[in-house]
Structure formats: C-alpha cells, structure tokens
Image (cartoon, rainbow, N blue to C red):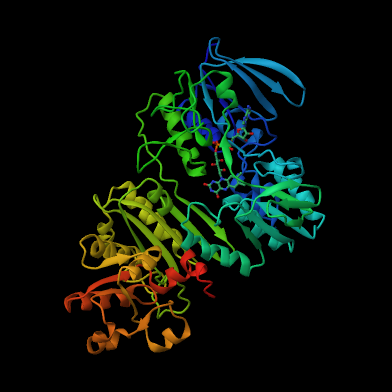
Length: 550
Ligand SMILES: Cc1cc2nc3c(=O)[nH]c(=O)nc-3n(C[C@H](O)[C@H](O)[C@H](O)COP(=O)(O)OP(=O)(O)OC[C@H]3O[C@@H](n4cnc5c(N)ncnc54)[C@H](O)[C@@H]3O)c2cc1C
C-alpha cells in the first residue's frame, strides 16, 4: 500500500463527518467508507417526518450519494457493503458485498468504527410483526404501510422516536395509541414536565397508555400485560437503542461498563489503530465524568471531526457530554440538558430544583406564550446540573443558553448576569434564563426557601399551613386542596389569620409567592415558597394522586 488507507465503517453521522474532514485535511489519503445499508449520509433524524408527509420527498432525506462524495471529496463510498469481521492482527476486514453476494478482504492502516446503535428488540411473542425505524430502508417499509391507509396503529415506547412517529401517524389520520411501560413519556424529563407533553399528545388525538407493557404482537393486534387488546394494523417498536458492538466484539476490542465500545480521549479503542465514535461508544458524562451512553447526532458529528483531526496529527480538544436534546411534540418544543431530578434523587445528590413559567417574550407584546422551565442546581457547589423546558416557543434558546452555561462552568446564580438579546417580540428585559439565575441566587443564599410539589404532604404533616396568595377569583377557579386564600395585596393586613408560624406559600407560578415569603419572613414567620407554584403542582403526580381535574 503506497497511500495511507483509512477505512470507515458506517456512512452516516459520525462516519461521514470523519471521512469528509479527513479528506479536507489530507488530500493524499485513501479513504474508503463501508456502509451496509443502501444509502449514505441520510438524515435519520428526519425519517419520522417523512412518514407524516411533513417532509414530502424521500430524496430530501438523502443528503449525499456515493457519486457526489466521490466527486467533491474523492471518497470511495461503498453502499450495500457490510463488514462481517475485523482481524486486528493483520489489519484486515472481511466484507460482504451484498449486491454481488460475495465476500472480499480489505486491509487498513487506520480503521474508524461508526456503526451506530440498533433498536432494542425484546423477546416478545410476535415481535417480528412490528417495524423498527433506523434507516431509509426501514422508513420505506413503514411508508408503504402508511400509504395503505391503516385504520389504526400502535407505537410501543414513549421515547423521542416513538413520540415523533405517533405524531406523524396522527398527521396521516391514523388512529394511534402509544404504549409506555413507565409512568411517563420522554424519560429525560421529570414527571411534572412530562405530563405537559402527555396532555399535548392526548389533546391532539394520541391515545396514551402508561405503565403497561406489551406481551404479544400479532398481525393486527397488540396485547398488553393488563389484558387489554388493541387493534393495530401497523405496529412500531421504539423502546430504545443499544450500541452496535458486534464488530468490536469480533475484533476483541474492549467493551465498557455500559456495553458500549470503550475509547480513550482520542477515540482510540483498546487497539490503537482502531478508532470508534458515535452512538456505539461510551462517552464521559459532563456531571460525574463517568461512562455514559448518549445516542445523539451532535455528539456523533463532533466526534467524527475530532477523530479525523487526531488521525491527521492535529491537536484535539476532548469534551464530556451533557445529552442536550430537543423534540417537537405537536405544538410544543420539549428540550433538556444534563441530569434530571429523578437521576439526582437516585444518585442521592444534594440539589435545589427551580421551576418557572415565564412568557417566551414580553407579555404585553401580542402572541406571548407561556413555557415551563426547570433548573437543577448543586446545593454545595452551586453548579448547574441540568435543565428542562416545555413550551410553544422560545424553549430551544433557553435550554441552549443553559447548556452553554453548564459547559462554561457558570454557577447557577451567574445566569442572572448573562446579557441576552432583548426586544419585546423576542424576549424580556429579564430573560427567563436571567430569572432562573435570580431564583437560584435567592434559593442558594436562603433569601427564600423553596419547597417542591412532592414535599407538600410532609410539610403539612409537620405543621406548615398552606397559603394561596393568588386573588380570590383565581382561588375560586382552582385551588390546591387544603390551602387557605390570603391574596398577596392583603397579606400585610391579614397575616394573623394564618394561625401558624410555619407557612407554605403558593401562587400561580412562584413569583407572587416569592414576594409573600419575603414579607412573612420579615414578620417573623418561617415561610417556604412552592417552586413553580400552582402550575407546577397541577402538572405533577401529586395532583393526579388527588384526582385533580386540570
Ligand atoms: C428515527 C431517528 C430519529 C432521530 N432523531 C434525532 C434527533 O432529532 N436529534 C438527534 O440528536 N439525534 C437523533 N437521532 C439519533 C442520531 O441519528 C444518531 O445519534 C446518529 O446518527 C449517530 O451517528 P453514528 O454515526 O454513530 O451512527 P449512524 O448515523 O446510525 O450510522 C451508522 C451506520 O453504520 C452502518 N453500519 C453498522 N454496522 C455496519 C457494518 N457492519 N458494516 C457496514 N456498515 C455498518 C449502519 O447501517 C448505519 O447506517 C435519531 C435517530 C433515529 C433512528
């Protein structure tokens, strides 16, 4: 071999980023990309939208072809070429040319694995009757079923892909039920945020079945553990993905504790000439620096570029990962970054949770829409541990700013110091992110103590009186059970009616409750403000436990 040959397995997000960057940096390399499906550089993130007709043409999903990649980047891209095994001693691959149905060998100097993650297929009776969605061939099969106009469909799994597919089936007027085994959809969210998403799905016609699981799938039925039988002419299985480690195992490369390919900071596997990137590898968690799995496109693309830089002898920056993600659910934007509260509780971390419900832009400017934001902060170090947002508009920019702040190691209260762009149609002079910083500062230095929706019961048992400081009209419309109403503007005159020095204050979103708590504290009370107020409680499992009707 005269030229240095780099072979890349997997021609989509990570693999193709690596290939094109390698070419830009090294005109003299021989670069071969092996892809087992019939397409390279396809937009897997766009696949669900093709099903619903939002993306109208399949060709829009195909960003490049082997011919275009040859022409522009001089890449030797071989689709329908599946790597069967790796022989690291001889630096040789065995490849099945699927079209010719013949095996051949190919040697490499450097090998990059970017085989992605494959759908988890549980051992359910009749599972072969369900479709999974990973690549263009999968979407073509499902699309064919959709064009037959099925009367009903069942989507198994309430993760990102399941939720996106369910929405797109509704766009096609298919009566759709989504089954999720846990009590909520979208695991990265905490329950009081996920319930907003569940409401949106139901209001748009998705039938949601939570806390039930599938025991059998037939050609036209899905049977649940609870005994329910659902008509289903089209069943989609989307219960998660797992790193595709089969090739790595064939090469006896080290597999990590989370069952992904183990790599060092240069994306080198246990064989220094074999690199691995993307969904198949374990990443470093930004919060704990421990191994984690995050199957997201941004990370795969970035890793593709970095590994190309390293192989080209450039200095590289390593980065740990937060798992910042966003999904559209009908009219909602749903985004998250870092850890959620469920995970912090499980890890026994000492944290503060902050909820707000600000407008996307100045309330007086037409079209303002309320969103729900949640911030999680380490009580000792004041580091930002995670954030979640759900709303019609403006959630993406707030979560992205917070994700950037986490990377920059800002303390939570420093969010108050950020100078963010503002004019009435776009934001507020005190942006929602600034407000989170103010609330964090007040909570961390104990200007006002926050209470959480899941602490209300305990606090009342320990002698706290629940005081609603909203107006009488708001209280009459919907009240938090057990609360007494003293509107904020009357609190100075009427606080003696509380009858206890321990007070749990709440208002609609937490803002008036904050003022009330500060007033009562100065009058000698021990006041806590309910984080996110009535709205957060209303969306929480505490409200559903009391059969509260929204
Ligand atoms: C339906 C869907 C929607 C998604 N939406 C989003 C989103 O909105 N946002 C987001 O951040 N992420 C999204 N993702 C995830 C994102 O697509 C992945 O994180 C990203 O593509 C991972 O890149 P990768 O290079 O590791 O693997 P992939 O992009 O999956 O590429 C791996 C390729 O390797 C090929 N391959 C595997 N084994 C072999 C072999 N032995 N020989 C040859 N080729 C092989 C596969 O055929 C595949 O094409 C979505 C994924 C899907 C399936």
